Amino acid sequence: MDIWRRRKAHRRRVVVRPQDPEGTRRDILKIATEEFAENGFNGARVDRIAARTHTSKRMLYYYFGDKEGLFIAVLEQAYARIRKIEAELDLTGLDPKAALRTMIGFTFDFQSANEPFIRLVIIENIHRGEHLARSTTIQQLNWPVIESLRDICDRGRRIGVFRDGIDPIDLHMTISALCFFNVANRATFSRLFKRDMTSAEALARRRDIVIETILRYVTKRR
Amino acid sequence: MDIWRRRKAHRRRVVVRPQDPEGTRRDILKIATEEFAENGFNGARVDRIAARTHTSKRMLYYYFGDKEGLFIAVLEQAYARIRKIEAELDLTGLDPKAALRTMIGFTFDFQSANEPFIRLVIIENIHRGEHLARSTTIQQLNWPVIESLRDICDRGRRIGVFRDGIDPIDLHMTISALCFFNVANRATFSRLFKRDMTSAEALARRRDIVIETILRYVTKRR
DNA sequence: CCCAGAATGTACTAATTGGTTAATTTGTGC
DNA sequence: GCACAAATTAACCAATTAGTACATTCTGGG
Image (cartoon, rainbow over all chains, first blue to last red; front, side, top):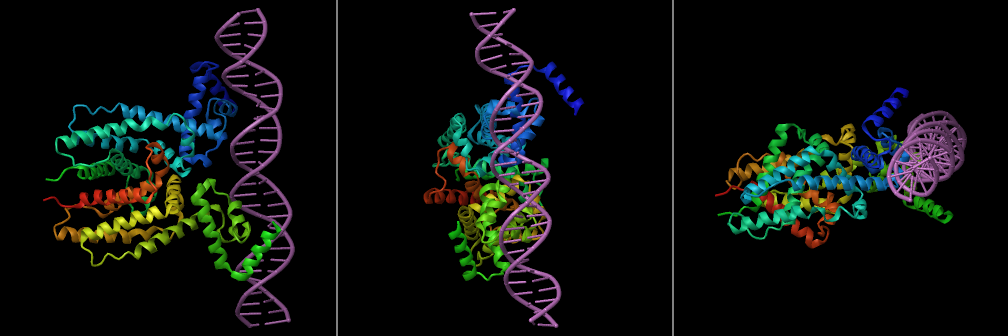
């Protein structure tokens, strides 16, 4: 205990400035994200977060008000991060089919690789989105995806490879649903049907099915 | 308070036998299902369940051991119930396409109408299926669905309307994913994309898309 | 150089929570 | 009608939990 505290103090003094609001905030947020994603809002323990932080419980309340404020901050950061990564996806120069394939594949890979984020979304849904509702920043972050999909659909329709009447939000819902399920319902589904859902091969196989499913849905039949 | 307790006692004496193990179990299980589905495992309160029951907290521990035992019992009952309803679905006499359409539609409708069940599944996934693992009864309940799908696929392939290599478990996963999402992720998705997902029209629209998506995936192209 | 206000550490608390102890009532086989 | 187990009640408890009071330290601007 004593040794640990000394090491902590040491680390802080070397890596971080003695008083470093931004650093402290970031530190708390990182640990809190892990704790909330792992245990849900009610299962998460403020004391446990504080203990793993380089600072004290007091700071947590100082910066985020209460447990709920901290959870909202965690959600906001998580959503902001995924949006930022999504924005890096460049689909210019790809024909509609290739663009859609790329986007679905990207979504699948991203969600597969970011279970904690998926878990936060699930948890927030269990709470009926009440924290998301109280957040001012998250609301309009997600429209770029829709616009991107709308563009792909329009282009596809114009050159005659996609059929009419594909709504980009519906399409996004389908993509999300198929990618999400593989991570979100892993535990029960793989247990119930004795099917591996985490190995590289299983993921690759499923990825192909998801892409194929959606492409067949939008493709115009001749 | 006094009046309420007298009414409670009165009700029990009239409707239920003074000592009625089965009735007490059922009573507890019903309330517990609501409480767990609403608040998750960690958010659920044993005292709250007990208070809404026609019996006392002690009975809850008497019959189910502890909070976890009660949750497992809730899960088991929920899964058993859905399986029983699923078994009532009669697909004989339907051609493969119609059978698949019927099954998907049924799954969609059932899940849409049983949010508490969906929430229990989500909650169990957040807990990585640890309770399901400790249940002895749930494990092999879910195979009939797979067998039913396998039969549909086989028949469809034989008469040349479905293509080869459709795995029934993959297919079930796709069906589940698309139906599940609409209930499970309602809160965040509808909030983020300002889209109604609960009205009769919205459900009907989405139901059609889900069915169409899956049918296009299995159908053989000419 | 000093001091106001921001940042942080320590120690505490009031309320809640899952679970239990021990005694009492009720039904049943003999 | 009685003995004995099953069913039920009421009061209780130890541990945990989110949140706080208060003192202290740091830092930048005048």
